[in-house]
Length: 276
Ligand SMILES: NC(=O)c1ccc[n+]([C@@H]2O[C@H](COP(=O)([O-])OP(=O)(O)OC[C@H]3O[C@@H](n4cnc5c(N)ncnc54)[C@H](OP(=O)(O)O)[C@@H]3O)[C@@H](O)[C@H]2O)c1
Picture: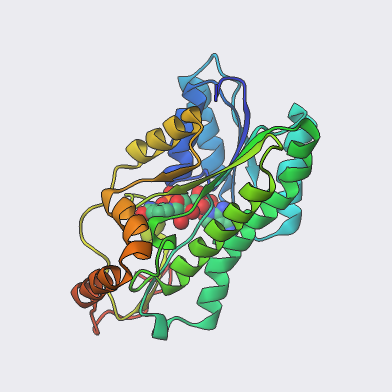
């Protein structure tokens, strides 16, 4: 796919992978609408991109909480009104919750599902009528390696990404031949703010190393978009997991138990964002 001139909406563009994707796509000439809840940040990012790439139309910042249906309607409807349609939707907004599943509250499950799954679904349902009208479009869903298999201490997060993967696969099959494609991205651990803002439910600590630089992750995603990839599994471990989970589930189970015993920490307390 040639990115130059494509009308692209990115959710969760105020930091991390979303922000880095905005920069990478702007460099290729995409006409961007960047969305998130922190509007000040979006405005700063739009300004930086406009200064860095003066030949590309400046990104438009839209405040949008993907868990609020009216916000999503305004995001998609407003972009269509301004630009005529949408060529690419990148569902990137996401939050994380970490710790033992038995300590995870029902409200924690609901909050991670409401952003990572229902937020993405809401955006897809809003954008698809416009893509259908033009018989073309690309939906890029930022899932996770953690959606390939339930990962220890990521019970709620893994569930939200597995749900997103399943729905993306259903949609992809249903849309075959329509001109609309669905690409699923499975990043591994990436160095972003998500870990500063997540709820830590307790009972386990995060791995201390192995976090990919965010710019490398964004560049790999942009290359995959250009190549027309269906799936992008981003780490060696993720690729091995995707093969072994079907072929040798007992090996995967043993590896997961090893991770669980390495990261188990009964002294790790519950911490909600805002608490230090
Ligand atoms: N970092 C990793 O290791 C990793 C690994 C695999 C997959 N991922 C996925 O990659 C995506 C981006 O995460 P990141 O690591 O770049 O984290 P990040 O830096 O925290 O970015 C998350 C983005 O989502 C936005 N967001 C959160 N809740 C939202 C809501 N209700 N409505 C709209 N926007 C919302 C945040 O902006 P506001 O707070 O301003 O709304 C922010 O822009 C997520 O889907 C995440 O699950 C990350």
